[in-house]
Amino acid sequence: MKPTISLTNGMFQAILESIDEGIHVVNSKGLTIYYNEIAAKHDGLEVEDVLGKHYLEAFPSLSKETSTLSHVLTTRKAIFNKDQTYRNMKGRLISTVNTTLPIEVGGELEGAVEIARDISRIKTLSDKVMELQAKISKKTAMEFDNGTTYTFDHIITGDDAFQRVKARAEKAAQLPSPVLVYGETGTGKELIVQAIHNASNRSGSFIAQNCAALPASILESILFGTTKGSFTGAEEREGLFELADGGTLFLDEINSMPIDVQAKLLRVLEDGVIRRIGAGKTRKVDVRIVAAINEEPDAALEAKRLRVDLFYRLNVIYLRLPPLRERRSDIPELMDHFIHKYNVKFGKQVKSIEPRTAMLLNERSWHGNVRELEHVIQSAMNFAEGEVLTSIDFPMLLPERGKQLESEPLREVLLRTERSLIEKAMVDAEGNVKKAAKQLCIPRQTLQYKLSKFPKSQSAE
Image (cartoon, rainbow, N blue to C red; front, side):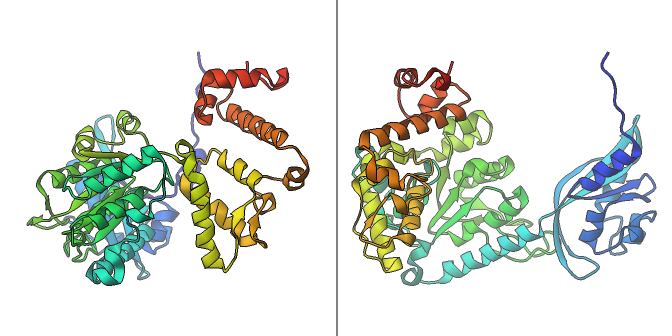
């Protein structure tokens, strides 16, 4: 028999106090029996101001009709993720997402608990984003280039596979269908999406929104807009669909979009009609949706991070951006491009990278893709003193190897670098040769052969 461990009142109290959310518990008569410091901070009160009092006495601005605790005590039905914006007793504007639950023991109602998560900072930031987007949408195309920076001329590639993607994207620009772009972080998803918008005949703005790390309620209000009074503190505000009317709405990391918001997006894709939060009427919008995903679509579908019906609705035109390791022939041209860019920005006169260092850079895995390559070149350009970048300018890539590169044969340097990469991959893969080979982008048999050449103490079993 397994030993049982019971929580003492002190332990239970400590657990409640460690939770970074406001907790307000009342008994069946509405008297407050627990009210933590976080809840008090939200409301601008002291714990003693509320503890032991009826919730309507402690919060006179509430009534039985407006209080969620009252509703739950009456109906015994939970309320999930309800937005609330209000000024607390100290005059501070607070935005929370509240969940209110009935507490039942043996079928009898014992009380209710309300859990409030402070999203004031997120709400403030989202409001600022909305204001900026609104200002951009009202500027002329000449001033802001419709909110974009890139065209197809900015895409640097000589790789056959990427050129085919580019050609497909150029054709897609002339079509009204939704587009789904898949690419790892740093592959240039927004670059190609902006290029599609600029090559299209759409006269409206290009509006971009990253769907990650935003609560469903905030993202929904950003996308669809709000009506004054739709919830406490709500204002009359356009959503991104309205701002992008006649243009393109780019939804990045759509696999991070909450599932219930995905369902509402699906309806817009199907009929082109939106409804602001709290509004009684709908609006027709002409918006071209382009979405991006940073993981394999099959993986997102299997993990239920992406609705199947939404995927098929978006996947009318599919573009897969190859990672940098699959188009290594582009690396030298990209390095030259970034050297020129930071020559202008930093007032330098760098012309090239020494061949041995360039070769080692070319062989890197580049998990951060083109963005990582640019940051590495930018870092080196900050410290460059001559016309040629050397290993000394890349300390993060070649730690303590500057002097060795000057004296060692190239073959030995490459072998040591290869061994270091293989050992790191084997550690990352926890000794799994197949996984390590996939990370290194080489056949499993090749990795087995290379491991066999290492001393026995370094080989994986």
